Length: 318
Image (cartoon, rainbow, N blue to C red; front, side, top):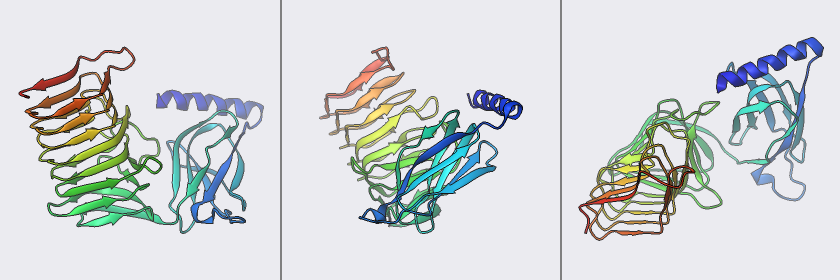
């Protein structure tokens, strides 16, 4: 698909050379979150266009005092980056430019980039930063990573997060936490995945994209996963949630689109699985040793065909 797009734009460039350079207008609004007051100054946000996949800089412009910008750019395939000193940068990868376009408005938050990796002890991540996971991240047993609402976490290729302690993801409906790829043009399987190997985790309103697998792990007793969103961006042969062990779970209100199983939970006694929307090729909900479990109001399908190989599979459950 990527090669097809590049050939398409190579054709555009050839036509442009023959008949005069073709350009298209790109416009939009980028404002500063702490200047959202009457007469706030949103100027000097820099917008840079990088050619893909070469990452050669094409052109750039700046916002005016109201946050408006407009620039004429040659047809092509671009990474667009918005930056200003003292603010968390924003990126848009894979912009295919073949006509005039108005980009979605965006707001830059005060803060900066924080590059993380290795072993970290108890800490809290806030929207003062966007977090780039440069090396595999490990939270040891007895330690807690808390991630506040609205935080974005971007993983370099092949990197992941293993939580042997506790993970608290405190997203909200209006400000989801985002786990995604750091690649300029994200693809399924870019980064590893999130692995939980401890109890009492709480994950709420997490948007989870471009990993090699969904959330996996074991010994996750008393873990809650609510409003997790996985929408078909994972690698092939991936699950949504797959726990080898963990009782007293609460897995509710999640949207899971995966190529294998939706929710697989072994040794899951006293757990609750409800109001999940699952679209998979394998089993929708596979639970084992699930005595005294509550299962209700889950919607399970296989893509658009309306069926799944096994909707709810229960084994050794009373």
